[in-house]
Structures are given as C-alpha cells and as structure tokens.
Image 1 (cartoon, rainbow, N blue to C red):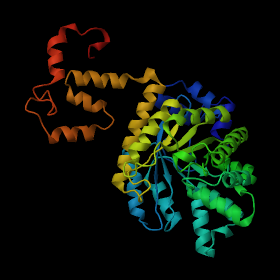
Image 2 (cartoon, rainbow, N blue to C red; image 1 turned 30 degrees about the vertical axis):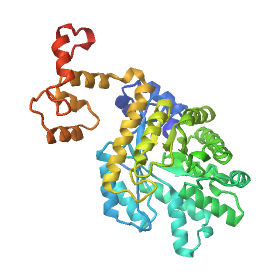
Image 3 (cartoon, rainbow, N blue to C red; image 1 turned 90 degrees about the vertical axis):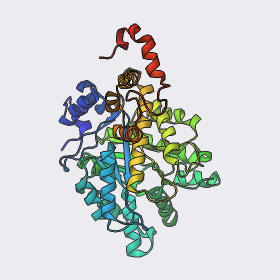
Image 4 (cartoon, helix red, strand yellow; image 1 turned 120 degrees about the horizontal axis):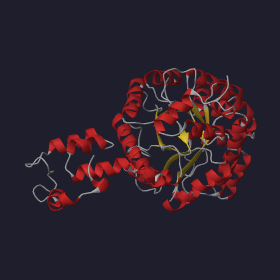
Length: 437
C-alpha cells in the first residue's frame, strides 16, 4: 500500500486529496503538489472506515485538535466517549486520545468507535503505564514492546501519532548544562523517556531506530507527528537550548521521514511569550521545509490558570496568523484538573474562534463571512446573523433569554440603538457591495 505522499509524487490525486480540495475550495492539483512536498498531510488510516477526511498544512484553514483521556485519578470510559462526541459536535477537526488510567486499549477502541474524526495518541503513555503495572518500574520498558505497541495501536485505527523521536542524549545534556528549568518539563511522554534514557544510560530507541518508526507509520499511512517532549512549561524557558536542540532534530527528522514516503508534521512549542510566537513558527517552517506545524497552545502567560483556555486562545490566534496549521485546544481545567465534557466544549469553541481570527489575518481574501455578518447586524436581520456566527445556538439562547421590547433591537441598547438610527439616516445612501444580497 502506498501512502498519500507517495501517490502524490506519482501525480495521482487520491479521493482524500480531492475531498480536501472540495472542502477548502481549492484546486486539487495544488493540494496534490503540497502533499507531494510534505507541506500538507492527510491523517486518514485506510484501515478505519468512515472517518472524516481532514487536510492539515500550507494554504489550508487552521485546524483544531481536542485532546481527551483518562487519568489515574479519574477513569470513566463513558465520560471519555461523551467528551469525544462533544468535541466533534463543537467542530473539532481531530481528536487525541491520551488516556493514562484504566484499560487503555478499551478506552482507545471505544473512542475510535464513537467518533468520525481522525484520532491520534501518544504511544509512550501506554508503554510506560503498562511497564509500570508489570514491573513497578517504568525504567524497565522494553523497546521491542514499544514498537509492538505502536503497531497494535495503529492497527486499531489511529490516523496520527505524537512520537517523541527528537529527544536524545545531546538534548538531555543541554538541560543539565543550563541548570534545568524554571518550569520543569511539561510533556508526560517526553519526561518519562528522558528518565528512561537517564536510568538506562541508553539512547532514545525512537531516535535511534527512526527508520523503523517511519516504516510502521507508512504501513498504515498514518501521520507521524514529531512530539515536542522538551517543550517549555513556562515562558521563561521558551526557546532555551534544550527546546531548540529538539526542534532542530525534529525538523531534520520531518525531512528524512517524508523522503522515506512517510507523512510527517512537527509539534511545538508549549509556553511562549507573545513576542516570540512569530519567530518560533518562522524557525519551524524554515528548518523543516514547511512541514505542517502542530502547535500545543501556545500559552503566552503562566498566571492564567482557570482561564487558560483564553490565555491559549490569544496564543492560538497569533500562531494561526503566522502560519501554524493545527492547534491543540486548551480547556478551562488546564493545569488544574481533568477536563469535563463542558470544559471540552468550551475549549473547542474558544480555539475555533481563535484560529478563525488568525485565519482572517493569514488569508485576508477569506473574510466574506465576517462582512456578511456585519451587514446582517447593521440591517438587524437577526436570523441571518445567527446563521453566519460560529456559535449560532449560543447567540440565539442569549438573545432569547432577554428579549427586547422592539424586536429589531437588543436589550443592550433598546430604543437607543445605533444600528437602527444609522439605517434611518443612511438607508438611501447604501450602494455597491454594501447592499445586502
């Protein structure tokens, strides 16, 4: 079986490429060209039928990922299925199933059965959890078991995986030489791999046997997302030498992987102050040959817990603006607790709004929906306006809960309505494309 990137290089436009072109209102040949160059990926494991086709990368709308999963404290498979469905209902483009508690195979398979979205994961979670259960010591992880587990998870139907290939002994030495960090390590899988390497005095097998990783991903045409295991967990650690060492390696591996015919994207960067976001994305794009960039957050402040979905939305809008391709949402529970179904819904909504704002700047030619919404608001065409909004049900619920005396207005202004008065004065002067269709 050939991968999307291999088929694109042969000049073949696959059904998936055509679907992406139709969804994005773009030329299919352009999509195929970008897939061939490794600048667009399509996570679509052919062994899992019925999943939505999603394109991620250059020239496409910025996509939103929602992460769900159990923990050692809270393990409820039914709740995770409800969270997966909630994320899909709210418009998430992809899901990551990141369980770390309970029957991990059962949770993954239940989520895969429940949703139509492409699903990814981090295989190191299950590898270290199962090793700990068996030996009470994660350092006893057998690399052969890890590779077997990756294939088992792919066979279940996963369409992308965050695999921490860019951590190596050189990276660890950078952490030691710089006196560790203000915010410690933020990646669970990355941190346990660092600990494994330190305790066993061995190189990371995912780095050492990278061709084997790519071979497994190619077998299932899954997207290899090069995990950001040394990402900063505090803005004061942003772009330190350890993070940059891993970023350089991941960009090199992205290039090697796509040369092998494996779809690849790069992950980053965690907590990043606002003024560094543009530079971070520029570096990833330049060093990786414009491989799709999967951005976790980013979170541009460390004091917003409880509202970190808003903190991250600010970072996400800026990231989308400067070229990020896939944004992992953040929920109100970030840094505090396992998200609930309501947290998932709120996280997806604010992230969708954030990437929409970023895309308005990244693609100025795609602003017509906002123009039509503004004109509907001007004309007080409430039903038309609500259909143009990202969250029409929410807007309708708020308006219906506080109905105005004059139906054309809202209770914010009542009879002191600027829109109503403006139309009375200038209605006869509206011309050109300012006339509502």
